[in-house]
Amino acid sequence: MPNKIAVIGDKDSVSAFKAVGVEVFDATTAEQAQHLVKKLSAERYAVVFVAENLAEQIPETLSRAKLQAYPAVVPIPTGVCPSGFGMQGIKSDVEKAIGVDIIFNKEDKQ
Amino acid sequence: MAVMNVNPTRMEMKRLQGRLKTATRGHKLLKDKTDEMIRRFIVLAEENKRLREQTEQELCAALTAFSQARAVTDARVVEEAILMPSRTVTLDCSKRKVMGIDVPSMQINDSGGELYPYSFLTVTPKLDDSLRGLNSVLIKLVQLAETEKTCNMLAEEIEKNKRRVNALENIMIPQLTETIKYIKMKLDESERAATVRLMKVKDIIN
Image 1: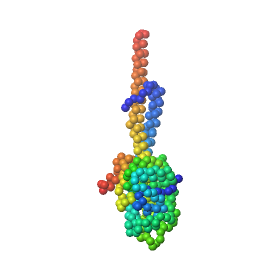
Image 2: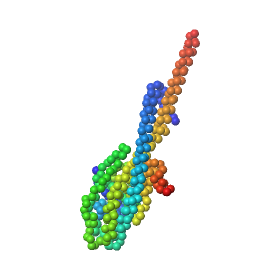
Image 3: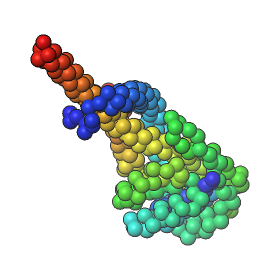
């Protein structure tokens, strides 16, 4: 069973993760990120966090990773405030499963 | 709906009736399965959204503190401070079944070393804040990863299941019903033809 955690993102913003015991991989371009996600999927990584700005550029790789149980590839915000890409992912899941987005719509009405 | 290309015989009809029965039963079961999966999915999706909102806020705060630490101290000092972390985090991973799909289940498991792997004097307290924040958000991040993955997989499965239900409901079942009806009509027709022929023959003999 895989048991490691990795973070992919540009070094300046994610290197803090190193101190809490998570492995950090530096990537600044979409190609590097894509390559890393593929490489880490083949190794013993259970969770791969990808910086939102990079995740946005590699939607195909992310959707391919959704098909198997491990690793879980999760976009995380790395800037000052979240860009909403992660929420977009939940929204599209809900739309896929139910047809209409009932979870986010409900909040808009309130 | 097009009638299937079959011989209109009693045996064929029997076979198709069997298939229709299985299809109807399967359709009902699959529909129930979809309903249950959607019910679970909604609960998970709400949980997912809640977790993501929380973690995104906390994570952003921690990372902002980190970049502030880099700004006020020499970036190389900060780099050096975190170069050799004294703790490692691993996960206890297993798979569990939710509605017949393997979804991940993870437990965080850290080695419990010192959280601040640097000297007390050299680095700003901002870095301490940042690391404390990150450490606490990490547990939630792993939870988020687990929930999000489960959601992803469940959504995928629901979509697949819906397609199966639709195929059965709109194609398979009408086609079978239609074909059975067609065979029945053909058989009735030939039965009537036989009766009429017999009557004619009787007429001729008399």
